[in-house]
Structure formats: C-alpha cells, structure tokens
Image (cartoon, rainbow over all chains, first blue to last red; front, top):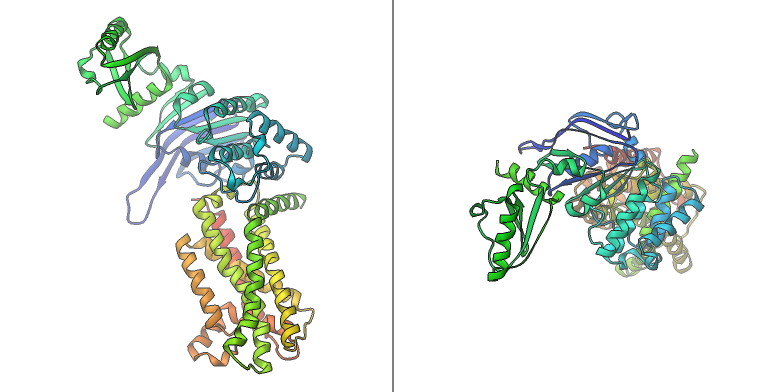
Length: 311
Length: 245
C-alpha cells in the first residue's frame, strides 16, 4: 500500500462561528500504480483531505499512513513522499517552463541527465516544447497549468497528487495529459486525481471516490460505483424549448439539465417507451435530437449528490 | 549536509529565477534610494556641517537594509501569500528553514550594489570621513539578517493587508522618526525610550561604528538588541511556516 487513510475526520473551529466538518470518518487505500479519482463539488472537502495526506493539515482524528510512515506524527514525510500539482495557477514569474520543471526535478533529487531527458520527453508528449523557454508570465493559462503538471511529475514521489490538472487545458492536450498520467503509473507511482470533471475521470481512473459534504458517498471501480444506481442507461436530448417536467415521464428515474441538454436516467424496462417519446418530440420539433448511452460516472455523481442535497 | 546543499541550491535557483526581473529592478531602486538619501538630504539641509554629512552617509546603508527587509520583503511575501505561492512552497520536499535561508541570501545580495555605490559616491562627493573597519562585514550581515528576519516574521504572522500597511508605517517611521540620519537626542523622550527597545537604532549604531570607526562606537547592548530581534523574527517565521492547521 502506498497510502492508507483510516477513519479521518477533520473539524475546523473558528472563533465565534460554528464548527465545520470538512472530512467525516473517511477510510480508503491506494496501491502502487493505482489512480484514484476524487470527485466532488466545490467545498466537498477534497482539498482538505489532500492537505492532510501532505502533512499540511492535521486530522482531528484518524490515521494517515504513507509507505508505513504516520503522516500525523511526522508531517514532513507527507511532502517527501508525495509530489503535488496545486489547484491554483502557480505564479512562476520570470521563470520559463524549462527552468521551473528542471529546478523542481533537481530539488526532488533527480540527477541532472535524467531530469533533462525526462523534461524533454514530457514537453514533447504534451506538445509544449515550443514554449519551453518563454517567460511563464507571458504564457497562456493552459501552458502554465501543464508546466505545473510537469513540475509535479518530473521526479515524481511515490504518490502524485493532481488537483484539477485539466483546468484551462485545450481538448487536444487534455488527451495527451491523460496518456502521460496513465504512463506515470507504469513504474508503480500511485496517483490521486482531484477533479470535478467527472466525464474525463471516468476513462482515466482505476478507482473512484465520490465525495459530498465531507463524506465518501461511494467508492470503488467506476463499474462498481455505476452499479450503485438502478438505471444503466441515459437518454440525452438537445432541447429546443423548456425541459419537460420529469415526473410526467414514467420511464424517467431522474433527470437533470446541463446547458441546452436534458439528461434522463431511463428505467431499464422502459427503454423502448423512452425512445418512442424522444422520436415523437424530434418529429414535432420540440427537441433537436437524442442519444441513448450507458450510464456515465457523471450520472451516478449527480444522482448520489442530488439525493444527498434533497434529503 | 549534502541534502542541505542540494536543497539550498535548487530552492535558491527557484526563488531567484522566479523573481529575477523584480530583483534587478529592486537592486536599481536601492541604488537610487541610497544615493537619494545621501545627496537628497543635502537639499533639505542647505549647508550641512561635516558631522551631519557623516550621519547621513553612514545612515544610508542602514536605511537600505531596513527598506529591503521591512518594506519590500513583506510586500513580496504578502503578494506571494495571496497568489498561493506560499502554500505551494509548503509542499516542497525541503525543510522550511532552507527556504528562508535561500530567500535571506537573495535579499541580502540585492542590497549590496546600492550600499557599495552610495558609499563610494558619498565618499567622492562629500568626503564625509569614512573610517571603514573589518567589522563592516559582521555588522552588515547582522543588520541585514535582523531586518530580513523581522520582515519575515511580520509577513508570515500577519494577514497580507496588515503586513502591507505595517510595512508602510515602518518605512515612514524609519525615515523620519528614527535616529538613523540624525542623533537620538533630537527625538522626544518617549520616542527615545521606544528606540531603546526597537531594533532600528541599534542597527544604525552598529553600522555607523563599522563605517566611521573614528567618530562612532556601538555598545554591546546594541548587538544584543539586534541578536534578540533577529532570533525572534526568524524563529517566528519558521514556527509559522511549520505550523499545520
């Protein structure tokens, strides 16, 4: 095991204000070479959890063990064993991506030749070599984000923590980024991927934990987590008019709206009724088109967190 | 020890490269500022006697060190805090004291051109009667590190806005209300008492004794005051950087 988290609870107390429970009784493990996706909305407690693994914050109760060392007793172990890409953009000022990544690689104990070779490899893989020697302040948000990513993985620790690594990154380079993350695990490096980009995480992670209000609502392989919901099918329709009230549709288990689209979880026995319904709406022009596909993590995520919200 | 050197080298590289443009700019500002103090004050005092000129000439280096450590540095740290860079530094696999040591050296280096050039210019223009002794090296280091250490402690202990405001007050206070460019006796009693506790007067005395050995001397008390403030500043900063929430 690279990381073992056992019953971690973190409560913040601020003077004159109520206590905030940021993490509540969280338990999970990460093995060598495994990617764990940590999904949750803003304020779900993801960053607090990660900060405790890094030894930057101390749990109110519970145990955190990295490669057999207790991070609670010895916080500096956290930042020795883990390398991090923080969520916020790094203000690297006058440094070029090449300087920033090389310096970080050397600081993390990488040899000169190894670091230089790996830097070139990473820059080529992510298609950012053309910006290698441009001052960071003059770079686009995406290029800076990828620089911060390279800083985290140039001489990776046993556990790499990536907090929203795809923010600001264009769709083409996002794909390249996922490839590099996957390759990272080949030599046993474990990865925690903190994100709210659920659709992308679906393809990239080995296991996933859905976090809400400081608790894990579900944890397991994407397939296991998807098994938590009744329906395994989703109907996505592009709307012309307003969304129909879902309670009038008996085949719909749940629904939500995302931009000009409505997404329904379809009752397994009612698939044909749902398609019938959609086809008619296309004919009369109230929806533009529709598609039926297997349930994604996003559907599970919305169903699980939505239930929590309404209860 | 090799780990310390490795860490120090790359932390120093990281910090100096990140701020290289600013640092050159600050070094230039320091040169102008120190020249300004030596030359500019002679406009304020139309026909200064040799004693006054010597006071100004031996006060300028102290002011440079105070402005760097207690004004520019806290401003930089306040900005770095707001930008999230301080949080990022906290994730580096190095001891926090390494970061502070590397930063201190960096800030010391940018003050040196200003101090050297202004002293040389003052010597050539006014010949105020410098009598520089070897004590200039320990004096410079002690004053610089006290100023930088206190600046650090202040910037890490206070919220960004508060340290920004305080750093402005300190610069104004150091320039106008501290016995750096003029003798202590000119200040009202209560300010004199205050300056026996604050490090500013001690800094000025130690610097003066090193630059004009024949005219001034510093007391053991001055050195002790500096040492205490230095330890408090750095100690506080390291304590705060190491604190887990």
